[in-house]
Image 1: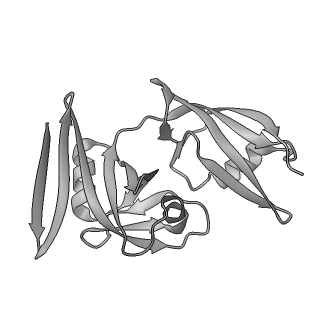
Image 2 (image 1 turned 90 degrees about the vertical axis):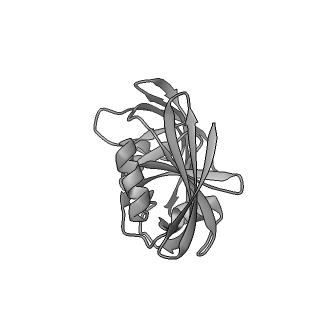
Length: 192
């Protein structure tokens, strides 16, 4: 069953889709993008207070951002964005192929903590776990198929997230925190 709702707030109209599937509540918001420069590949976004309130009701802070077939996962960590806007790091905007002013779909989702992760690493990298630990220090969520890039001596190398597991088994995405994460590194990419 699908419902379409229109909320009028201070003269602005915001479309919100509410879906009930198998007793799971999910809300989707259409928000205008405001980009934000970040030094690291962050996935922390800022949403308006009405979206933050909905997330608190659902006891989750994970979102899926979608735009014309592209999607990325993020974590809402601040609720101070202007109404009907989302403040998003440029690294996520690049992956979504969006810029300032584009309208994206923001879906609130549930997620579990990752317990195991399998990563593909270039053969030339001597200590891939140390590099990944540094590269992922500002990330909250990671997904299968995600590519993490690092520049070493004027060359860019890619680490690919091959597989993720949570307490529920194999997962498309999950929360990245804690020290009890088991990482399996497959060293199989040859760079010349």
